[in-house]
Image 1 (tube, rainbow, N blue to C red):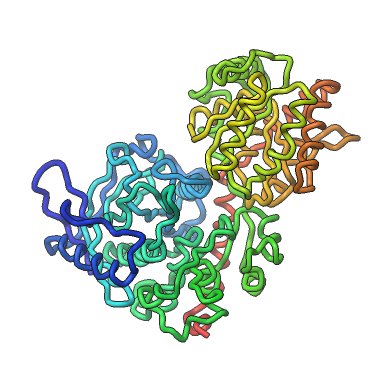
Image 2 (cartoon, helix red, strand yellow; image 1 turned 135 degrees about the vertical axis):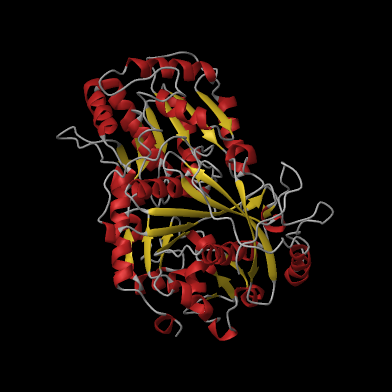
Length: 575
């Protein structure tokens, strides 16, 4: 099925997927009735038959910088250059809920700089700013799902960053024309399994239609996990993609995509595959589990987390299945965009600074204190936290530790983030209780986050678990010393200050309790009061540590090569 170009009645193109008079899908409806409704709506937007207009090179990108394509920074030999398709639910700066969006953008751009031909498939959410994306319509195609449902989707293209990585946006209003990516304040979308199953199948259909056959399908978390399943389960896909391999990156094993078994026919899977060794999970369908079973190679976002998910607690119920695949599991640290996160050039800061000249950091601290309405006190240490307010992030440890610390010690603390209501209310209460010491901003601002990293002296990160963690990397780059729990990627990126040598890049604690966090904070306060020279050396060491995406890209090249060498065929995984 070739993508079909749509007729344009005016310069302003209407996004297909739903007529104005048609209602959107209601997450609360019965899923069978819901999909009957979706099928009717999809057929109503059938495009005019014809061949797709092949994507052409563009001179501008609103999703990133414009200009000539960069020379590959370290191009592989020609035979090792790959066609790589990323399939994900998020990609910064187009749409970002958490660190996945940054990781997808950073790795895709780094691979492109190394000479690979990279594409990204992403839903065209209502949350994506259409004007900034500057997307052009490629055409439309029909996506056939397993239970006979046919969905007509529109496919748009934009480009990402200075490397101009093409991003193919799947436009289907019944699924993606909603305010949220995964959920709304009232809860998760009930039809998420159907939404992201369509994403996975559409990614394959687009590649077939464009005759662009990837060497590697690199999929991210449970929303992309069905791609390897479809590659192994649907025989008609073997012809175009017979030589392709799949790599599944697990950014957080706690998010698995568990849904009712009624979705199974839509996936095109026979009921005899609804087994505990494949997709069944206590009577539900587990999309991540199925992807773990069928992917040719698995990665996660730090070496330490790759070990932790093999243990019962860290694996969140999937440890036995991950252990079976441990020979094809590798932990690779995420990177940091060294251009975007550079205190010496960051345009979002009131003053720039570097490890050689920290005078601008003092100005950043003063501006931050004024912004939050705190007394301007250069003599007091300023702690900070930029975080989603969820249990995983250890906010309950902050709740246990900070009130007594604030009563006993002299310091200030600012926070930025949103999440669970009880934690939002706690931070509001803390700011009211200690108005000269604490300030909280509920929500998120990219600019304010940069200013917090630059203006703070210490950065709190008491996570219960942290697959990789990006905040500690940003904090170190901006001279804010991490006070963090030693878990997951934090263990791989932060070196605890060693008492004898006085060397390190942060202050770590191990006990996931309020007293454990409090002890680490008191350690930071002692450094501030009694050892300014040690603190200065610690800050300098932290600012010198770089985590470039080029290193992560190099390691992923090794994964792709190994996966292609040991590709598993459908007969080996069907069971």
